[in-house]
Image 1: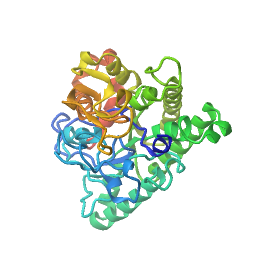
Image 2: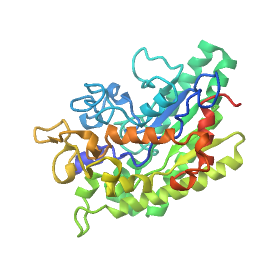
Image 3: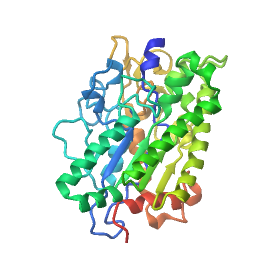
Length: 380
């Protein structure tokens, strides 16, 4: 089990749909939606890991993955769609193809995400497409767009696009909490968070230099409450959340919030939305019936306590629930399509007409969400 954990993808939802889901009609514009460039890990991987040489548990190209929507596995770490699929749909875009998919068209955007990826290149090194490589792939796309559209049109597309970044949990869970003990000797939690945030800041600035101006970030959730971490909780209250992991997520979220505010002051035209779902998801875990779920703790697909063993589809002993739509979690790490869909539907509620009426009942102020809503269409 220890070896499997070190190579697994630890980025559960811990984050959710950004309010990009404002259609052109909502904004009373005739302009098409902005292109959508996606960077991250398994929460948003649409199948890139299908095309790389990695170990089996770094892929989701086998049953029962994909059963609820595609009726076949697509490489998404879900029983169907993932968060960015719903965001694209509500923004009036088609499903955004993975970069490595042969013959994919990239005019509406590209998905560079890789299950298991981290901010740090050392995280699952050699098994995934790390964030630096994802940005190098983006550069290839940028060059291709200039060749196809011409420099002026390509520059406009790149400037108006939304850059969606969902990454970090693998660095903390696989790289620190459950990784090589030497890392915890070399770095205390504060130093390690600073290293992750520092590297992430550099990557954001790199995308900005390449023309990106409108960014969406998904903050980390209570990492210690995912099924596999409950199973591995070393504390006496077996079955409770692994609080050391959750504390790292909170520290990351706090540091990211400070960094993004600083970048907004320093970088001309830099706009962002930082959607913090720590409490949002935790409430669904603790009170599933309030949101149409029956189980907020146990994975639908897996084995062992809480379905916490990462064996969904890969061992004869795994169990599969009757209906994944009643579970917050699909497998030991990842949420169900039903949760992703709920997040996408909720994002629709953040249309401009709702500002001021639901501002105090949601996690994120309207001011932040409208930044990305505006990014879906040309300025008007």
